Length: 417
Image (cartoon, rainbow, N blue to C red; front, side, top):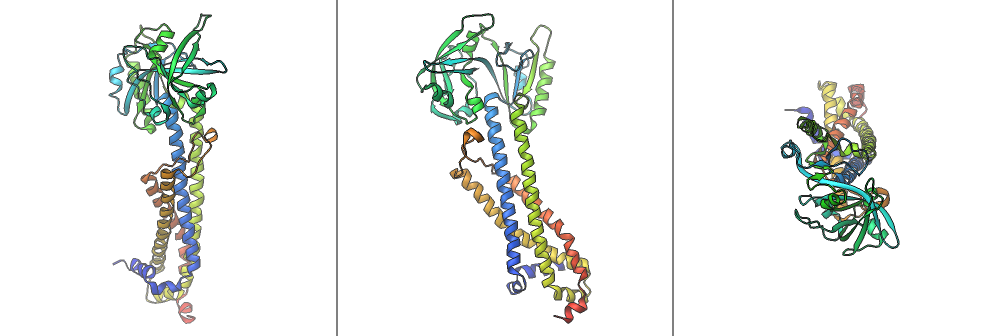
């Protein structure tokens, strides 16, 4: 039988013993623990939710990994490659690869009688994954592409449609200039749908349409494309998957074909992902401060518990209990009290997350934050790790203050009771 655990349970659960505790000090300590854990849970949920939301938006425009011509520079005017690559069938067999699709991009302008805007027409094929744009579609429908005919429909962003005063069902005139050509080439396309992602850097740029339109503009063959887009199942393994894709591409390369290279989304837009990685530091600072607050609150509560129970400590020592055994009693009691505070912290933190996730109460300015509501990521693993980490660190911080037990003399504590 664990005697120390038995005594601590009696002290914690027996209501007749609670009158000996300084209730106000204990309640303040528990409130600090609950508030600290709630802040940690909400902070982690908001930061991870914000990072996931922004990351998914960037990936929605460019996928996780691209295979493009080696001669391509930081431009949307890329030299063509053949879509009939010998490695194309094996890409889907790489562990972690979910989808492979073709694309082509071409910079140009969209013009009305009153305004003009520089854009990039991104052409996609019939097998393109429209789930990202379907999620962000605010008007109209997705263009219905096919393998035979060119589709004269485009998906326009809400920013461009408001700037140029274009609505769903209206026609837009796009102009493109090829190298060594003086006269621009013109396309008149119908706006089938309007999307909005609140990521203005991309919303102000991309128009989505049929890849056959770009092949026609560039005088490409039907099998020529700008590159392949690869979607992966786990973003944290993007570097490993890109390495496998790169090795596969290199193994199938030959002297007569164009030299290809792979490019991950993190290298394509380093400024965005570097900015998102900085947010991790903010989370660690918040976690450190909140854990320290919770720890010092429980230290003060532990000292009060020891002083109030000095008579009990004297009796236990007179009965032969060593200091180590008595320290365990108060450490167990502190863990019980910490767990009670953490229980309320979980209730508060999880409630805030679920309310925001369901009702979107807290709004944001999308022009500044790239999202219109505060995004939250409810991850049970994060919550469990926060609870275990908070309990472990707080308990370790209580070890040294528990040595105050050894300073209490049994004869004095019993004599003056």
